[in-house]
Length: 257
Image 1 (cartoon, rainbow, N blue to C red):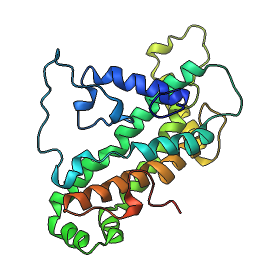
Image 2: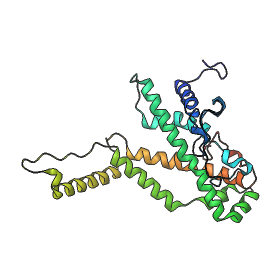
Image 3: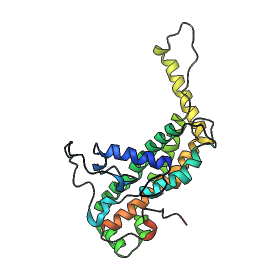
Image 4: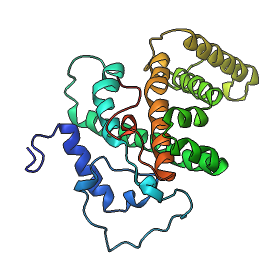
């Protein structure tokens, strides 16, 4: 039990402890890093020198650079993502599981918050266009302007292909008596061809590997890409001097009903 916020889940308890530890070595001074519980972090560690980062990566206008969408990320992870990727039951590996959860959450947080850097780049490429849309309160117009459907399609395909490639057991060729496989280019070529075929087959439908490529693709399509774009819209509104519409608040996703 936490004396300030009531009952904490085991994940929340471990996540807070991890962030306090990492804060002591300046993790959250990096513009790429965002804490899930920033109000629990201690002061700066004065024993370590301050790190200098380029000042032109993000804009502080309107508090744009301080946007933190980890509240909805944590909610979606526990309520939606875990049921998609985890099996029912209890393997009693609670500590190991939570440590893996924290690693995934921190990686996801970096991934979606890269949207702020992308949004800054897009703003600099067309400041007048974004300023006009923001001043009109046209969030849909901002979303349309920043969306690149071709790139998104490539990201989805790449995510599925990586899951199909790395989410299965490696191909092991049978030993052939009297043949040095390390020097046999034919065997290497055959192995590469087999791996390509296996990956293509895994791309076609659900597989029995370590992870279903279709699930990873769905995570990108329904969660990672939309949340990244929500952050971009919120950043651009702040960047242009206005608060984003309520559907782009850090505690929800715009696609939620």
